[in-house]
Structure formats: C-alpha cells, structure tokens
Length: 369
Image (cartoon, rainbow, N blue to C red; front, side, top):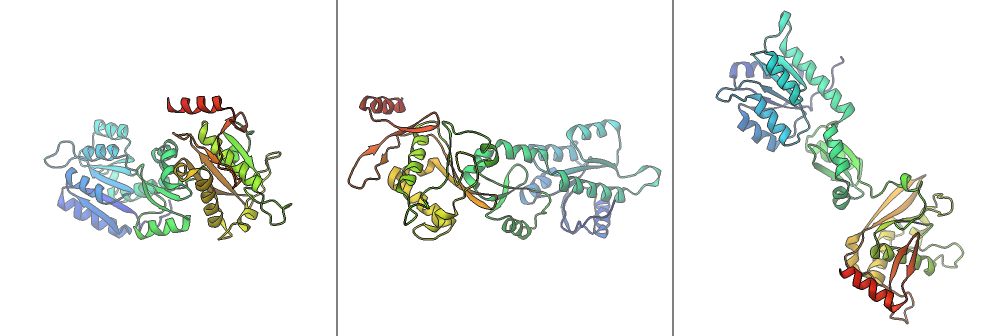
C-alpha cells in the first residue's frame, strides 16, 4: 500500500522492556511518526488516556508485575468507549492469547519475533497505516451509533453547529466546518479521526414528504406579503404565532417557514429578512422572531422553542421545533386596544382557538393533572 502522511498520527506505546522500547521508538521515528506517548504499565496508560486522544494504541501483552498486561489496557479502552485501533505486541505468541485479542476487538496481534524472518517493525508500520486508512474511510461505528442515539442532547446543546465526535463525546464545536477544522488543528487532533456532523433541528427532506398534521405545519412566510404596501402582513404574523402557541399547548410540533403548503415548493424567507426591523439578515430575522414570541406568548416559553435555518435549493428555510409546554401558553391579542389572552390548541392540521369558558377551564385543569 502507498505510504500515508502519518506525521500527525498520535500513538500510545505501552511497553515495560526498556531495550525493546528504545528500539521500537527508533524504528517508528524512522518511519516518520512524531507524536508518540509512552506508558510503562496500565496505571500510566490510564493517565495518558486522560490527557490525550490517540488513533492507535500499541500495547505489550505481558507487562512485568501485572498478569493482565496489555489486555488490562484494552479493557480500559473499551470501558471509556475510546475510538482507537489497538495493536497487541507479544514475545509469547499463543493461539489462546491471539483468540482473546480477536474477541476483544484488537485491530492486530503481532509477535515481536516474526516468523520466516519478517520484520516486526515493518509489519507494525503497515498495520498502523491500514488502521488509519480504515478509520479515515469508515469512521467508527460506536461514535456513529452514539450520534444517532443522542440527537436530542445534541440539538439541545449544539443546535446549528458543527461538532467533532471522538470516543462518544463532543470534542469540539463551531459555527462552520472550516472553523471546527481549525480548532481541531490547533488542538493537534487528527482531522480523519472525529466524526464531523452539523447538528440540525429537523430532517427537512423527510418532512417535505409529509402532509400537515397535529405536529407539522408549513408557512410560506412569517410576515412578508408582496400585496401589502409596506410588505408587512400582521395577519400572517398572527397565524405563525398562533401555530407556535398551539404546539406549546398540545403535543409540540414543527413549524417550517418558507415552504408553500399547497405543493411543498421552497419559497424561502429572504423577503422576511428585508423587513426585519434592525439587521436585514438571518440574525435580524431571528431577533425579530424571538421578540415577537416573548411579547405575544411569553419569554418563559423560549426554552421550549428551538430555531434553526436550513438552506434548500439556495434558499433559507426557518425550522422551529416546539416542545409541549409544562404550563398553559396564552397568547396576547394583536389588537393593542384589547387585553384579551387567547388560548390555541392543535386539532388535526389546524390551530383552533378555545372560546367556550368551560372548554378553557377544563383544558387548564387537565394541564395541572
């Protein structure tokens, strides 16, 4: 196989025989490895795992004074869900130990004294390169599964950001992929080891295949109306806000702004940007949206609403995921002369207003139970 650029590869060597360790270091440096950390026993190895991220861990199977040897290090790696290729080195090659290493998921098992005159250091170098190639191409299944299983946590903490996941943990995050890669480079982490993913609030493509329901609604715009002289339509704004309030008072839901309901065509919200009160861009629109929610529904409900922006067909779509609130969300009337508090809930694919006092009382009572 062609040699890879391994100058930024991070290796952990766990070896207690000084003579062999010196020889191993010398050979690895000749191959071009520059980031090598040493541990002489499992305790030191644990300390190094606390301090660094490694792509490849090379552990002697037998360590003086510790019958578990490299297998103890392997068990610690598994316990921590560490993403790394583990290569077991041994001077005592046995079928039993080889099978044990295989069952634990070792990348490779290399005898220090190779058969037929083979060079163990060259074999080790080739094995490291193969491991790096595999990680670079296929990533890590455990990290991918962790990403899928922790979508709610990631959306709660890293919404609309790019994250780098290593060892089933978010190592870095940033607004753009370029910024994230810069951070990874500054920390001297390898670019090919982490899973890099943008945490988006919804799968827009999947939602576009669905019809409006009790938990999904499409709106062409939030405020913009080409037929109005100032392009502002208070009625459109009201309809968007009542949908949000109805989701809060029901089972939650997703509101997509910038999608034409009839044919699911992408209208975009760029025109809404232009009529934002301050910044005429995405930030200005989001600020206006949050101000409207705070004023007409209540600041305390912001914690149940997550806003993100997704680009589709070169147009921006606003995605709002609304969770069910733990308290009743009343909405102020848009009529400044009235002090009415309106109560909206979802009924099928509509947001309806409860007007009957008995209905309102029963709904509020039900929310408390």
